[in-house]
Length: 127
Image 1 (tube, rainbow, N blue to C red):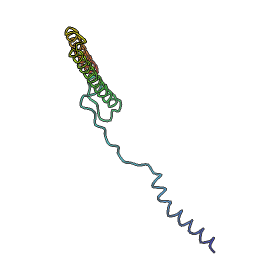
Image 2 (cartoon, rainbow, N blue to C red):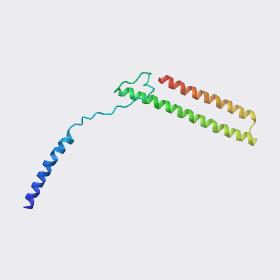
Image 3 (cartoon, helix red, strand yellow):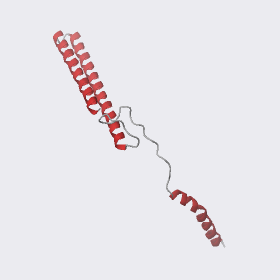
Image 4 (cartoon, rainbow, N blue to C red):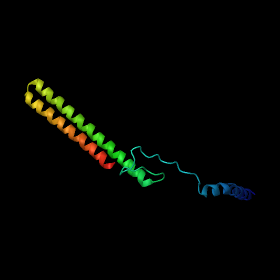
C-alpha cells in the first residue's frame, strides 16, 4: 500500500511540476536595457548610433585611453614634484649648487609640457 501511495505522490508531483518546467524552458521575451554611449563620441569623431555595439566599444576605448593618458600625466607631474623637492632639500643642505637646482626645475617644466602636449595630441588623434 505504501509503495502504491509513493507512486501516486510522485506522479502528482511530476504533473504539478510540468507547467513550471515548460515555463522555465520557454524563451524569455524581455528587452535588454540600452547602453548609454559616452559623451565624447566614438573613435573618428562620429556619434554612436542606437544599438551599434562596435561603436560603443570604440567610444569606451577612446574614453579609457583618455583617462589612461591623464593618469600618466598626473604620475609624471607627481614624479617631477617629488624630485624637485628632493633637489631643493639637497640645495638647503648645501650638497648641490643653485645652478643645479635651476637646471632641474627648467628640465622638469619642459618634461611636463611635453607630457601634456603628448596627451593632448593623443586625445585629438582619437577624435
